[in-house]
Image (cartoon, rainbow, N blue to C red; front, side):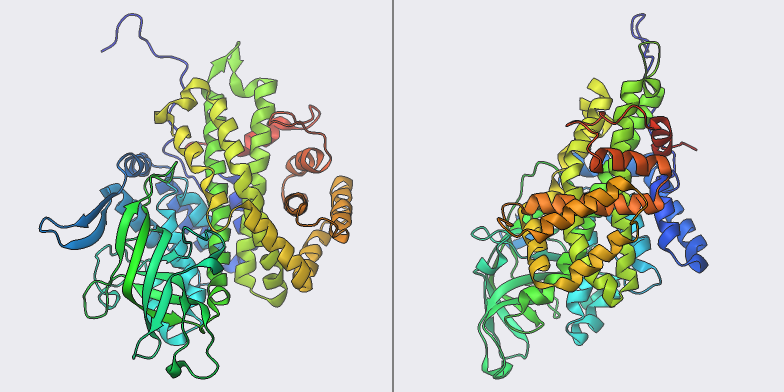
Length: 555
């Protein structure tokens, strides 16, 4: 029913019923570029299937429901017994189950595993970002566990399983398992060496009792957690044992079926990421098993951190892609001032500028995923530096892209049903998670000062585009000048890392993107023909082609 004055016109239809993967040109080309040609057809079919699911009305409804009905903490049962459980909306379990079934925790056991998993993570995270947290940590836990072959043999098959089993039972009873992480504490935050959680050795070899408090522990219903605690060297550990920060595997349920001491004190009331439960937890004599050597906790868990940092970049790239897709879609169907918005020169400039940011993020993140698959010494050195650089920059670009894309929808974008407010609320998270901007910048400085082979590998990557664009060449020269001058280097850390990120993105786009995309990126980001807001690209560029490339074509 409608009244005579209530005929709705000039509204963009919902962006549903499309293949999120196949309509993302930058992502499709990146996968084809880095994948083994012999397996490309299989990978394409797998990702297209996931892309169609991500673009379906059903999946989008799951994402809405999982965020509308946030997790609920139940500390006690009706009789007063402590149970420490979190209830999720069924749609959260559907999202997480689909991610596991699609292999988004399985990058380590198949050819091009990191590449195809990264592309899938980017696609499926556009439905909902919150459930990606346990997906990411489960995937990332594998290299830390591999420091202990026995633990890896026990847990790795479950972490890479395609079976989602949400039951809170002993890990040995489950065909598939998920992992979380607990490092930060309220007095230390990113300074994990300030952790005060204490680990006391038990009679059982490698077993400890943990006592302490974790300020941030996401996905508390996971089957196991990698945590950091200060260990006291035991006699059984031998003369080489060291006191200090150590990595531990803390199971939620003990092998005999009893629940470990894992007191969830509260769930965080967060800006975004509402579908995911982030909690504060306390340990009191909680059983855990050492992973790696005592006093080597950071070294043990560092590869897990690197993997989750890459997922931060992938997650931000996913949010940017979805924001840009929604903006271009809206502008294609919305008429104003005599024609479609997408044809208006000023709106076209804004959309093209946003599309450049999105494509640069996607291209860079997939290059790093491919480096994980190659796993040569050169690629390991390259990603040691490039992951921190990319995490710093891409996650910081996400909020400004989300805000500008929301504005492209006008008042419609400010309304919850559009989905843009959820993207906007989510957009700052990845910059905070796994080390804020300053932590990333300081990590880059540490690598520059201590690991010359990493800088050599990074510069070698930049050298692959030498001579292809004078603006890129000039930016690389300026960067080398910055790196040669160590005066006040900590104060200049963000400036240096920003320039490193831009020249890396420019290098990849010059080598791989269409000429109009590379030209626009180099002119604006490297050639300084750009303003302080989106939509200030030089008018001489081929903006229409850039926007057309970013359009999410519907089937």
